[in-house]
Amino acid sequence: MRAARFPDDMSNQDRLTPGDLVGSLTKTDAAYQTLRSWIEDGRLPPGARLKVGALARQMAFSPTPVREALRLLQADGVADNRPHKGMIVAEYPIQTVEETFALRALLEPVAVEWTAQNASEQQISQIAKIHSQFVRSVASGSMQLTAAKLNAEWHRALAESCGSRLLGEFIMRLWSTVPMEAMWLSANGAASVAEHSTVMEALVQRNSTASSAAMKRHIVAGLRRNRDRPTNTPGTKTGEPSARPDSRSATPSFD
Image (cartoon, rainbow, N blue to C red; front, side, top):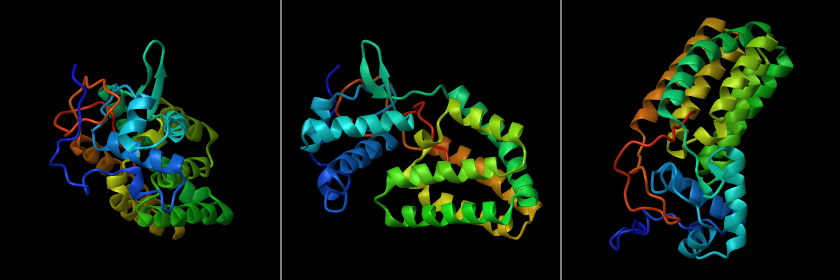
């Protein structure tokens, strides 16, 4: 299969490159941001091989920051190191993703309801602190790595503060099937902030019913965004991003 490339008429605005980011980030962070954006918008689809040399040439970087960025993506569950293939964009079966959303919509609202009822003031304060950091990270517009981790940390903190070790473990096991950090999509940042804020408003007032309902709406909205996300043609196995997203993939986005 011929390596897919950007079309000649693609504007610089459409082509996020490390040069757009290196002024405020390390080279590894800039490479991470760029690769993650290409994966999120479908230019590097699920199963695409992530060849260090090809990606480094595309981004005009040395191999070292690209290699380190791939390790960060692997730690997030966005990339996967396969025998005889090397590093590829992680693939998650769509049925698994749909089941994960369905179970999240059942379990996480209960966890938030119980957190509103049972959590200590210190726990609520810590959850609110994580939320504030998440809001600032999304507002910065160039901190995908931080936003993804803070999103995951906020959800974990809610589950861990519900007062039920069993429920918390169920939710964490669910998330281990499809990692939270892997599911973050930066284009959904503003919507996620608004939905998280609605949960937090009810939570700090100890309104268990409202906080639970807000969390359920958040998860259902995340499922809709997942179904509507830009995707690319499965089967592109090049180490360079393809030109345009145009069909379903199996890489979901969670909020």
